[in-house]
Length: 92
Image (cartoon, rainbow, N blue to C red):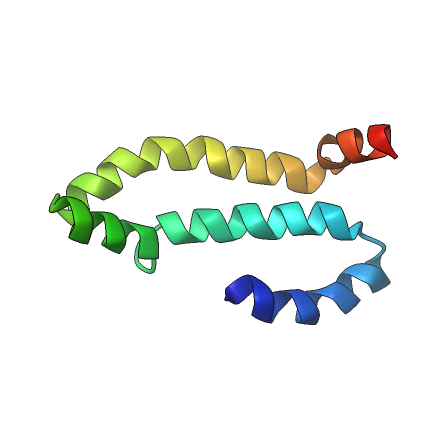
């Protein structure tokens, strides 16, 4: 739902600043995914807690090693849009 709410707000800003909509779409989706996995508002953490019965602390400790590369990739893709746009440009 956050993507549906934020995209119409961010699209004009992206177009004025000259950013590619496909690049920003990938960044938005990846950032939202990271947001769903990080406390205190990580909805996925609470779902995992409820389904598995494992404590929230153990789930967070297990997820943190995956968050570090996700954040690194997000920053890398943010600063180097060619990594996102290489394949679409190759096809077009």
